[in-house]
Image (tube, rainbow over all chains, first blue to last red; front, side, top):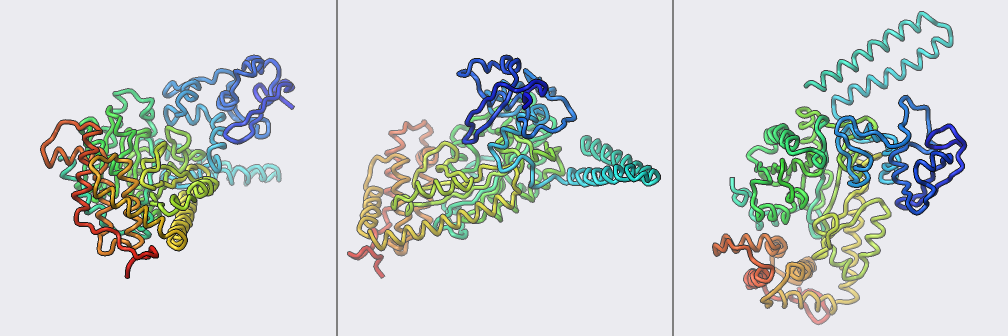
Length: 178
Length: 369
């Protein structure tokens, strides 16, 4: 089992706590555990770790962006810190949701029915969402076309994807300025 | 415009009929929304809160439902006005405490109220009498959709509508029904009811929402989860639970009538006696006794009495309303002490109930006729 924090070393420290009625677990290597102050069992809060440090091993998926390891960076937009979040239980601005993304998911899981929005979507978003769904579908087709060595088809699909990406970015600048 | 010239008189507010209004006082749906660009109110500085106010207030004011509405900054309202608005459940206690950049826009029929710079940039609510959760949702959804075309609302495809507190993120919806449950309280079934409702992921709170006591046997049932479920799923569930609680309340009342009629008659009769004869009475005691009087009305012990009279007393015996009445009627602008208000409240109750005849029951505890 790999360490949840660095994802490199073997996890030797296993932390379990009850949080809002749910059992939360964290596995860490010795050096990460020390950095987090886990050697003092009385003074450790799993909330801090979960909020700041990303997903546990059961859910770790390849991430496009690197998860900061220690001392989660401030929100680039409003300067909110993890300590602020912990102190107030509130976020500072809309951007904070992207900044504290990984840790938040754990927090939200304990509060809500799911961690993906299922309800109403603003009209503008509905359009981009459809375009994004189409893009995903085309990407799969592209992969298949390349695998089957249908390079002409692949070129056509690639062009369609490019057009969609262009449409999405145009739409986003349009909604941002309107 | 003066707030008190704008507000619908209490006697009219209490005469608005609604489905299941023997038990359900009001239904409310609130949406939390924020603008993409500015920090949330708790994080924003003075200037940013002002900027938000300047951007948002004109948009809300021009919404069709807000035509001829009441729009004002909280800082420009007197303490008394703010308290009156809280007692009428039109604004939250949190908003009443905020001044910098905080504002409210209220529709002329008082169905819609938008709070600006509360915990979120926008808190938009629709309130309707009786059990009308779905209707309230439809109304506020429509307003929200219109607002969305005018303002860049913070939204992410994963987390939905982004809110200051993660407990509201997603749909940003808080659906609640205010219920009068004297039967369940007297039958000592309330704790069980709360536990059962909690198990379904819904919260049961007191008269003024979060962290308040259930005065006058009035309880609020509301959703807690806002993410991972659609608005309609949340509303359907709450509606179902409320219907079940209504049934339980009616059953509890019927059972009490059948098994302990003297006890019921005793409680209602004593409530009537105290309310019509006291000279010093606290807001809390008045509410609890008025609740029993209302129960007596529902059970037919006060034939020919309009229940709205009792419902109105629930509102006008609240502290700020007492203060307001003293100011308007006798020109007493000086802030009254709680003790002075208790005296004034008692005299108001005596006067209002003077012409109300006592409860009519036969020895078996059933209403006469």
